[in-house]
Image 1: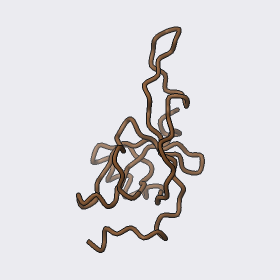
Image 2: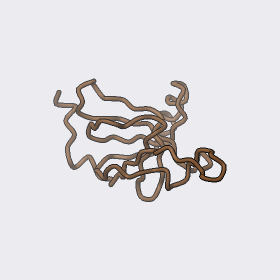
Image 3: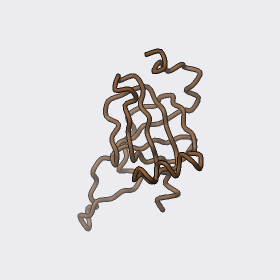
Image 4: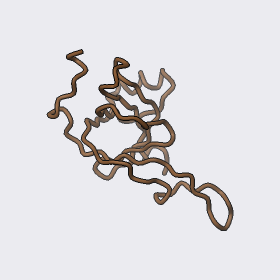
Length: 119
């Protein structure tokens, strides 16, 4: 249990959590994915790191295309495809969420940056 406790000193990055709100174009009726379709839920502290080469390959072998790992204190509502983080102006789209240890203490999220998605 002691290894799941997140110390405040480990959370050095300010993370804005946003959720996608389905938004349709008034003229065409198509779904839009611009910045207006994302609502800010909260700002919190986390630890966000670029994946090392080894971790990047392991993520790809697991079927995830990810460029960053974000660790946050546990919170409800972090979902793939509908959640993104903004860290230092970089948009990170969540592709995998892991509730570490299953104890609702800490989340580890694999994310893909907007630059790698062509957004």
